[in-house]
Image (cartoon, rainbow, N blue to C red; front, side):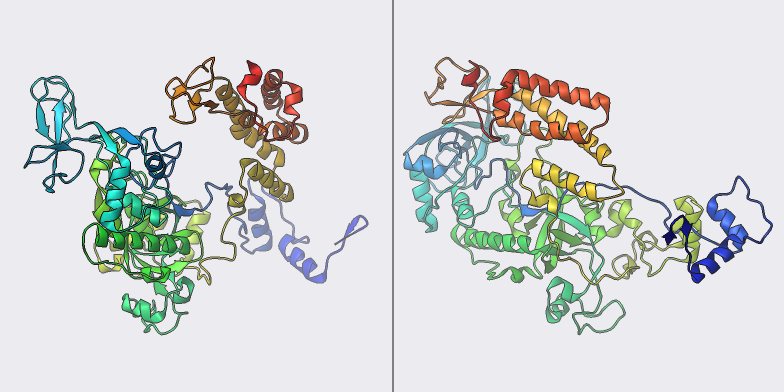
Length: 608
């Protein structure tokens, strides 16, 4: 402790310092030595660096566990055009008794030669086939994804415009499946696939009934952050010992029979532990599929689940957004967190490297029944993030090499730490630690992995990061600054300057540009206008036009930016840049308007 201008040491500290510094020993310090080397030489005791290397880190993304929704979310891949209002609601169009004119696939009945868009001929009730027609010479051909006419080189299209009595169709389908129409069925404005093949209207009714949304390929997805896991205890995943024994987990990692929820088990390569939100979602999907099998296919329900825990032991498909090959996995547990635990090899099979990315899961029967290439967008990248292939068995030797570097030992040898201290090349270190790579194409690659640090909990009491609890970006930034001010290891000024440079300024300038160059959109039919007509009405339907960018988007960070400039920002160039941007906004919107209550949005008529 310090007393006046003196440092007071206890006897224990004094003895330690005498041993370390050897004040009575005649020795000279070498200028090439660092402090630890000099102390080691003076004391005769090897003294290592306690801290080693410091690595800075920042949050990449918050955790997520939620149903995937397109923008806007839809229950059915069926076009409704500008009908049904802004939400593209089929029930709204039905109540208005609207007939919709939309582009749909061109099909022909092989029996009566009738053209239709339905999968079955309305007259003969037999399956129809897709046909394409050349826009130049009228040549017809069966669908084969070819878009160039073999006779004249013209463009072949597989769709045409139809007038559909949507009320009649919906009532007809509702009677066929013996299910009442829900309050809303959200469709799409138009299809962007090559053939413009729509889904069966009955699927939209059933999805809306179970509060489910469809993705572009006809499947129902649940997005969740992934995390690696190699071992678990039954008590950590909420699965009984008896159930796990039925799933093949008969012995723990020490070879003892499984009898207790506290025994440690090795997670099998294609087993996953999912969040409870995912289990609840998949329960609704199972009910949708059971309804689909019973009411559309005339088959017996397959799942018959009653509670989320019924998913234990069932198969799902896991898929990464940038790939087109899913992998089959088995659910063995449910946790209260917002992440999906899986073996690193399974993550690698999805082309992931276990760094907290977001993947999707599907109930196995969903892609097998509802996926179709005919739904996929006809554009570059349109086939990505779709289960074109499904891998039933994952082989460790076939996945990315990153997963092969997973070590399988219980403890690292002393030689490893010595080589690491000397900063030796990694190729000299990996040879002394066994990894999965050493056991490829052997049974040990599937089982026999060990761990170095035991863990009592898979999920802590904090289930969700504070970052997600703030509803607005403004709240997130303020919360980040409040935390940074409490941390001695954070330079608050530098952090605020980074936020200003990478987020606030680009947002303010970009939104201001978008505000003054915005389009105007019709509230009813969705038509867009680059310039506002004198009447402020839509030329097509006569309805009112509205802004697409509001003044609030420009102002939302102005007050915060001014406060941060005065308190934190020291970089003079950044200050000038921000002040110029704010001054430009003030000149146009006026100082008085900027001081009004936040959140108020003003029409562009103010400036006309």
